[in-house]
Amino acid sequence: MKVRTLKKDKVNVITLGCSKNLVDSENIITQLRGNDYQVVHDSNDEDANVVIVNTCGFIDLAKEESINTILEYADHKSNGRIDKLYVTGCLSQRYKDSLEEEIPEVDAYFGTLELPGLLAKLDADYKHELIGERAITTPQHYAYLKISEGCNRTCSFCAIPLMRGKHISQPIEALVEQAKSLAKRGVKELMLIAQELTYYGLDIYKKRALPELLDALSDIDGIEWIRLHYAYPSRFPVEIFDVMARKPKVCNYLDMPLQHASDTVLKRMRRQITRKETTELVNLARQKVPNLAIRTTLLVGFPGESEKEFEELCDFVREMKFERVGVFQYSHEENTIAYDLEDDIPDEVKTERASRIMEIQQEISFAKNQLKAGEKMKVLFDRKEGGFFIGRTEYDSPEVDNEVLVDAKENYARIGDFATVEITRAEDYDLYGKII
Image (tube, rainbow, N blue to C red; front, side, top):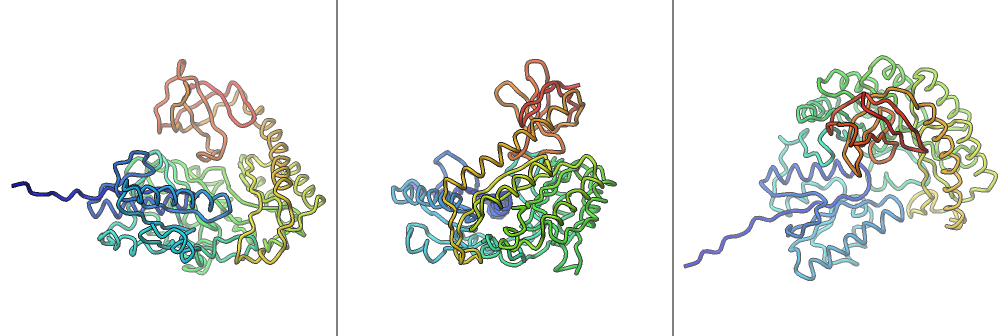
């Protein structure tokens, strides 16, 4: 007599969007594995019978990618290639009712803070003892550390507070324990992330406590680089620069999205800062940390952005000479304050303006990179690809910034290790060198 055995579900977690979403996916994976599930991440294999899509709802392109991914797996379910399909994340938080109506093939939709409900659907328990522990889906030598959730800012173009709620800081003690756990598993670089980094601590400590957190994280053995992402410029806690100056582990790197430089646009964006104040902050940062690399993101095509206002932004980029720049095109997001304004900049103009900013930045980046020729730099190697070992300096974050390439025929680098590299050639965005 044959006895039927029930095959244990295998779950594929698909992550879309930003690094904050990636951390959420890592926590989902950790909880499921803690319940004895077999879990893979972003797998192209078709042996998983359950799929969880962690969505992004930030701008139109991200929403489109999320919807297309949901539809793809909904089709897999209809064809019997998977048994269950669940959707979580920002898009699900924001458009749950509409999605349930339009894509009913999905078994259940969950918001950004509904992990226990998602687990319950899979007959899994939320294990509190796993808080602070999490799977790492990045290369083992670096990881993201999400220090807070949500945002209290009221930028008129941004839908993040609609999807992530109000700012909630994680206690320093909990973050230190999580960082120690990561260090024990070989993580050497921590990238601190949040919707708004500089607001950290105001809710639980009644003061901006990022400097204290950096001091605590710097004392952890095994952690060699600590990198700061998404720092809001208004009311910036300048003590951070003092910590950078005295703590070698805190990278001379600051990701500070400025969005614009025209006072009239900044006012419409409700950014709570002027161009003069921004310039003073950048100059102070460079004065206190002379080797600081500043990465910023800019937003073009905001409603009413005139050619004159855009030229002010171009002049600002030329004047400030940022080390790293990214550009977004304005996306007209419903239920934001700016949604009441007319989205009057044609898409082709937005695209052209974004290209003009990046052309300016390309020249700046090339000039700055030329100065690095002949320098010896500490490099952390991430991967081997196309005959090169590829790494980064402390001035570069993974996937978004410059890279250092060394010829694998002439050099050997261990992935996840540091090495000293002499820069022999510089291009617009990348450096080439040899290991000393």
